Image (cartoon, rainbow, N blue to C red; front, top):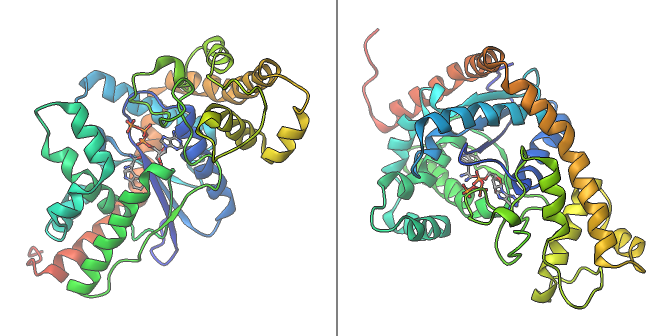
Length: 341
Ligand code: ATP
Ligand code: LTN
């Protein structure tokens, strides 16, 4: 399925903690939509395990979560016949290209990254270099495949901008080599909020168990979390982005709308005479019934590691030679001597 002439869609998710409903709505759901919509494109969906090492990991858990993420990719509908699904560390080229791109990236550029500021603040006194350089690795993931379209949630916008700047810098410093990648951010659901603290993003690393829906959790717990989501005292099921008081209900309406493909105005009409209780009860069923088949498939797939290994082997085999070609081209452009054959 590899063809370097074809345009490429590419994205990645880190196997840190367990994936959330935010990851599903903001990223994975769109991976699947794009897989079907862009039939002529190469699609690369990566499990970015090297990125996960930028925060402390328990090795055995990281390994297990990598498989769990693959099982989820498959369970939500990514099809290895249509998309290349692989693990970042299996491909030679991501870290090598990162090194070259590091030499074109300014400390000041990385210092401005808000995710770095947030995460380093949480890490205390020891801040590892990997956390700082993380966005350069992301740029390498994208540029190694000369990718064109990058489906991501809202919080990755700044990293993608940096990838574009690095690509331009390389093209300008050496010669035109890289496409300038374009972010594909969903109009709705690009930033699903925490159910208990709707001013914060729902995040797999946030310490807010009641506010975070984990894709593989017990579905009774999922239903409870939706039913106890914070709302407001005005009791109207109405979307109002200008009013911070309505952040909770705005978020629930967004979840409802994206999971049912219904306009928010339609949902408002449907619940014009209802209270938050009825609305949340319906929404909890929608979320549970969306997640049920995903969870079942995930749990089933996770039992068969041999099958999962086979998918990863195929995915890596599909992309390795084009990655290597691009890396060789870059090495040559920057002046490295090609090894004698
Ligand atoms: P962490 O908390 O460990 O940084 P995360 O939950 O932010 O993790 P990532 O692995 O950074 O998840 O993100 C994977 C993809 O999911 C990215 O494209 C990101 O933009 C998207 N995403 C993450 N959280 C949300 C959210 N709450 N709403 C919408 N999209 C999200
Ligand atoms: N930084 C991203 C994950 C990521 C990614 C990528 C996304 C790593 N490499 C390449 C798109 C394209 C995040 O979600 N934290």
